[in-house]
Every structure is written in structure tokens, then in C-alpha cells.
Length: 171
Figure 1 (cartoon, one colour):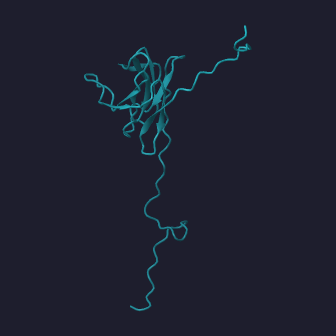
Figure 2 (spheres, helix red, strand yellow; figure 1 turned 120 degrees about the vertical axis):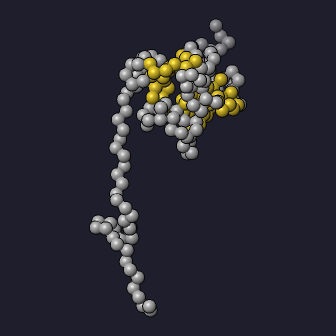
Figure 3 (cartoon, one colour; figure 1 turned 90 degrees about the horizontal axis):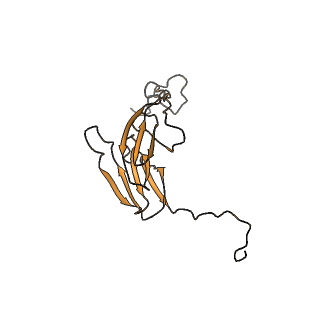
């Protein structure tokens, strides 16, 4: 039919021209209220979504034992992990939404990223092992654009010496 006027798409009330209604409005999910995890005072804390529930969990690592804390004051689980001098990190290395441990060994520069937690009757999941090529470096977790966390190992900064007021070579 020549000169026919095309049908106009239906516009819902309140929607500006040029935007079509596709379905019912979707509201963002309500903010999840996460309980505050507890751990002893004075101990370095590691944070990550350990069980994949969207809430950060807390763990501590000392003397080769990684302790995962539940909300309140209860210890949830303990794992033997690493060697003296190692650095333990928590991150989502696989993009699964669950943080798992990783170990950076400054003496060798090796990094071990564990892909799962140990079951009660088994061992820790397989580790992805790689050489950071940095001995005695500083390891930290960096979020990636791919939904996974990554470990960055940078050189340790040189030590800073406090001024003593003495001139070198004079007594």
C-alpha cells in the first residue's frame, strides 16, 4: 500500500519518546546486611568473600595456620598453610565469587593460588603455581577487570634510615 503510515510502537505513560517499554521495571536488589566477622585484636586480618554469600569474611594467618572466623567470636575453620616467611593472601582467583587462599614465598618468588578450600575429608584444591620473578618482594591483591583477583608482586622499597645527627666519617 503506497503512502501507508507505519504503526507507532506503544509507549507506556511516563517513558520519554524514543525509549520503548520492554517489560516490568526491575528494581535493584536490596543491600545485603552482612554480620560483622570477629577476630582477635592485634592480629593482621585478611578479608574476602570466603563462602560466596556476598559478605566479606575474615581470616588470620600466624605460625603456619590460617584461621577463618565466623560472625561473632567463633572460629569456623583452621588450615595448615605455608612455611615460615611466607605471605598469605585471600582473593577470588577463578572468578567464582569465592575467595580462596594464595601463598607468596618471598625466598623463591613462587606464588601458589589455591582454587578451592579443603573439604573436611580431603585436601586443599589444586594450586596454580607461577613464578613472580621477584624474590623478597611485596605481594598484594588487585581486582581485575575480568572479575578475578590478581596478585601483584612489586620490589620491596629500600629501607629508610632515621637521621642520627652525626656526619658520616666523624666521631
